Image (cartoon, rainbow, N blue to C red; front, side):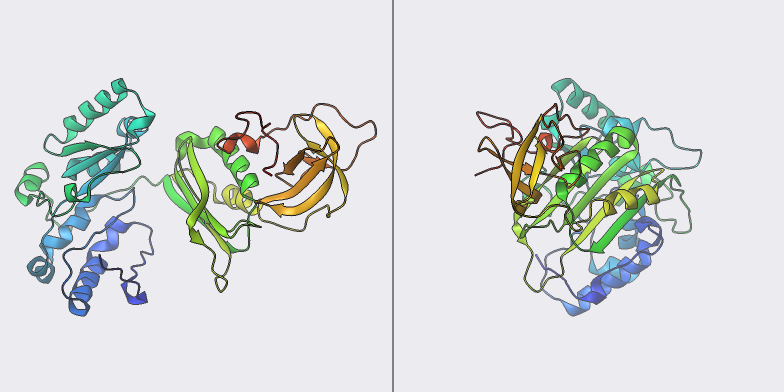
Length: 369
């Protein structure tokens, strides 16, 4: 595997459509890579999840120099078993292609992923739908994309003859295709740190309200009080995020947050405001302050530590137990109230998002010792 990290090998597509502009840029990059590097066995090209694979594949046939230097080994398509049927059934405006169908039609190998999230009946339904589009592609069922690389590399599966039978206009580079104009992406990037608990709660609300149109969202975050990077990704209502031991912030690295959302009818202002609302600012309380913490009911305590394991406050309660204040708002931590006590039900519960919380003898709001 060759890792090409020089700036001149980065292809920036200004109009957001990799399949509309990639042919020329990709051809130039392939020629340059061939000139600079010798002895590599192959090149893996990863497109976006919304790309039409045809223009990328065309590059290896319509450019004479590229055609002489390279051969297209195969097209691999990853299918989300949990969500694919909804996208296959989606009705597009007249003249607008369904990228999901296009990607399946051109595939030589299909990785049917997330099979652990659906039952056998659903898997059978997805298999039938895929075979209705592409009878020749091998379908490999996977969990977490785990597959033997030899089943994907050097497979010699791409057939120009078969593609031309399916799409006689495949080599026509003058043809135009239309994308769904309601589908777009929004990215947010800033120097600074986020409260990941607050972000997860906001994402939970966003998923409840817009999950059908929220195709994909992902990010790499700098979390206050954490040396590890918080990496998350989601598809519709499915969310997964954790601190990854493999990726730590270097001392000379600028701590920043990068997030991207892909979906239909995205409201850029709402997304940017939601993300920036989770940015870390000055805290209301200091170590030693007496507060009340929302532990299913309000309990009095004292702030022990600031930014403990990504939480703004670690609090010792009067009964000796310790808890976290996950967000610096009155919903979770407040000044002592006359009379005190009472139920502390919150609109959101960040502890639901933390695997293992509430299991065994430990209460869900308790801090680790």
